[in-house]
View 1 (cartoon, helix red, strand yellow):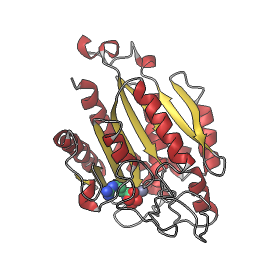
View 2: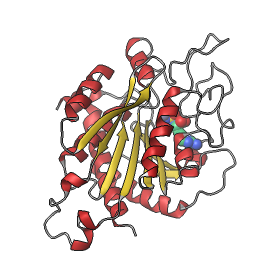
View 3: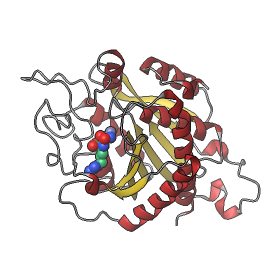
Length: 312
Ligand code: 0X9
Ligand code: ZN
């Protein structure tokens, strides 16, 4: 399939999403524009189209119509060079759309490409670009780290210097990309509390739970996040024998102003994760790893979605 043969350019992603929008269970819309004027797309996959398609033998208690409304948010591509993130996130979108047993009972919102300007820059100029494409005033260095620009523990554990790879920006939510994500998350959260938020990154083969700030208290539902995370990594590990590990984000290294911590600390999402995909040593992953990486993550997510849909 073209989705897994190779990495897509931003134009190819937009073309794919435009096609997908004609599917009855899917709606694709723009939540705002990047600094250079590109759209940031959100995909909403609706559970209602799956009603009446419950797997045979599903007890009435778990019929879609009887389920509480639960919402899952997935973020991809916030760091430009982490190409496997949008590639896998698009596979997840594809799978949930075409398979009613995946994500049943859940409303799923996905932003597969949160940093389109940075992504285009990695195709045209610098494969290892991380940040957005902000032209920082009074500096010869461009870019703000969109995963240090959120208003939770903003400032500490991030660079104050425009040349830093983790430059936090001039203030929290100074960037149009993080503003658009924030507004969309608030909007989605107002229609039914977000049960799980997952930010998809690379690399490291890790599943991180909050908080990630330098001196953070244990997050609410820490044990539950750990247990659900174990279910995820154990499932993932079995598919292609890759080792993913679960840990507290702060244990990896302290970082603050991340979307994950904001989702947990401000939106009060019950589960919030940062998923670091393959590999264990580089951002530059060969195209033949797109499919297997997607496969292992989808198996893990299937288990997690089932557990979420069954929670009281
Ligand atoms: O540093 C980041 O933003 C994430 N890692 S990446 O290599 N993809 O850039 C990790 C954020 C998770 N939070 C903490 N480690 N505190
Ligand atoms: Zn990242």
